[in-house]
Length: 371
Figure 1 (spheres, rainbow, N blue to C red):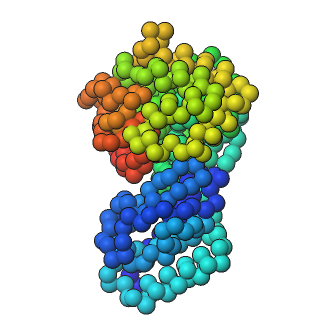
Figure 2: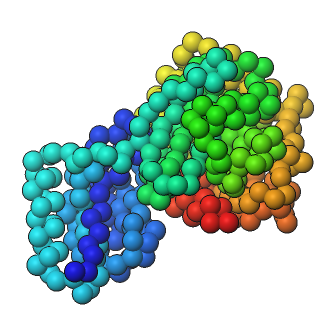
Figure 3: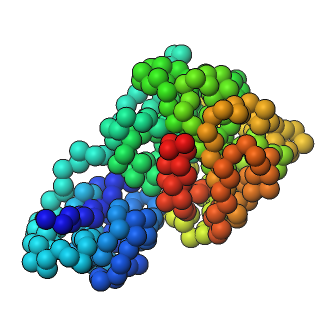
């Protein structure tokens, strides 16, 4: 029998239980390709776009715009035109019944959280998937593992994916030591050891891009590929005002203007995002950690304090992605990677490309994995 694809409410983050469908971008009867935008979904953290998991025809929309659905529940059906209508209706009827009962689906594919002890530091992480290829996602300055929430799930369909909180961030311990690039690379290498990951595909955003580059320089035999998303240290241009302002901001009014600079679409800076970051910044030890790490990123004159291009191994497959509208680490820095990496520039995307264009980041990681 021809296959039917059940499109489910995704789990974008460990705490997500339900999602609200704010709009369907595709309509019933539309032909869609894998990766096409299907619907806009609002979570308790941030709004995102659900993409088609496979090519076909959008035969049924089960959950209408304006409604909520539990994670894992079927919200639409994709199939080829040759699939009988009665089979489509059978699948849709089962999904409507489950939605009416409000019963969440089994959550077997959800990220599993854990703590790894590395050099006396507690590192929080989330694991999902079970494929042979192992991918480690490393966030940027002031971020955490949830900054990958739109990327981890689609990658986990084919691979085993780990998203970790660097020291000083998320649920990890707040002691960053001297905050140097070398010490952060030591932590990530120790994370590979602690979880028994022999060779990994490393993905790093911003500061995380510099960190994974340093890991590749240190243990190139353990790095299968690098995907760098607006990486720090690959050029002189950096918005020191943003970085210093983020570190110093202590109120919503002080923080919000800095967060607007992270996105091409500042509408993505929700009240919840601001509140979550303020809550994080008020934790014991976070202020000291951010100020210490700031000296790793920004020189006294306001330029970049990092220069990692010389650390990039020439025999490690590298894909770099930049948002053309990045105001924090501008795309002008991408020129340094000419001839050294597959460089992809995304129009109308800012510094947080993994949130604004997650499908493009997934595509870049898959290209790096494929070699």
